[in-house]
Length: 121
Image (tube, rainbow, N blue to C red; front, side, top):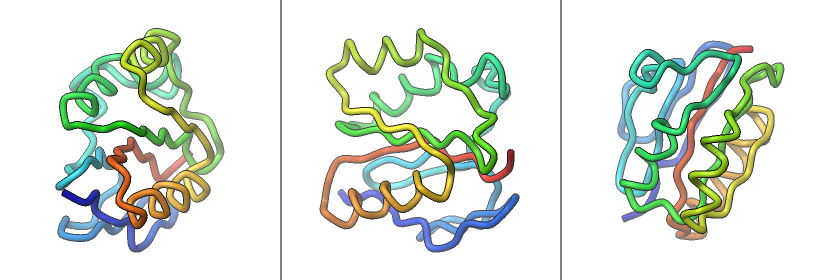
């Protein structure tokens, strides 16, 4: 199963193959969904939570791309990074547009890539 490509990203909106346009997304091999920060208590600080990345691991991701937002204000908790490291997953974190470009390249190459994407600050 291929991870869906992100076809457009701009401030506050993203378009992903096969999904309705939205602001933030969780993407993984075979699909994706809107990223609801309230599920695991994600906020810009302290950042992406361990529960967020565990969902990606449960979807078969061998590579994970974490977007830091357009202004790189979205952090990642040390616990989330530890969970990924212990699972042996390759992790990349970058500004949203750069993260999207990397994710799309990996997805296009057939990698089992997943990601968390935030389209504002």
